[in-house]
Image (cartoon, rainbow, N blue to C red; front, side, top):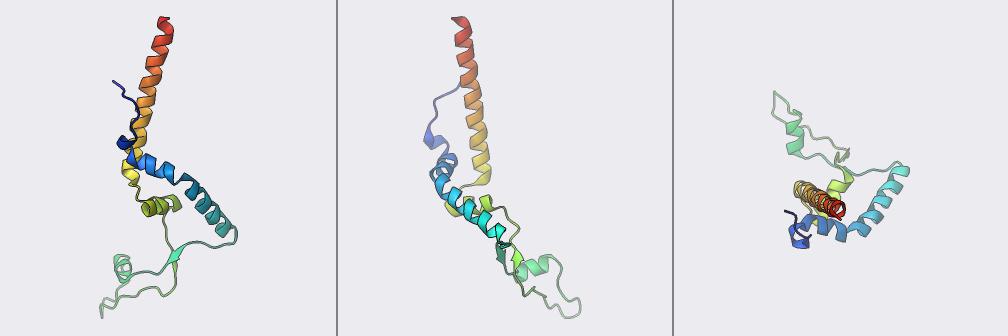
Length: 115
């Protein structure tokens, strides 16, 4: 049985909504950067170089790229990390909200048919 929406049951959705306007400005800035051919980069760590196998078999030396690389992460996922939103929990909350809305809609339709 459906219950009313309680914000405390959907903390990630609430947090994302609270920062919606902030994200809109940041996303616009990212779009502007892209139009200039600019993008987010970072330097490779020794751990990342090891993971891609960039190690001398003879000496064991790790070859770390000395130039920045694209971060390879979705901008929204970075923003979610910044505001403290768990993407998995957010998706589960969204699904629960959709289920709640479907159930409420079905109940409303049954009520209309009964009249």
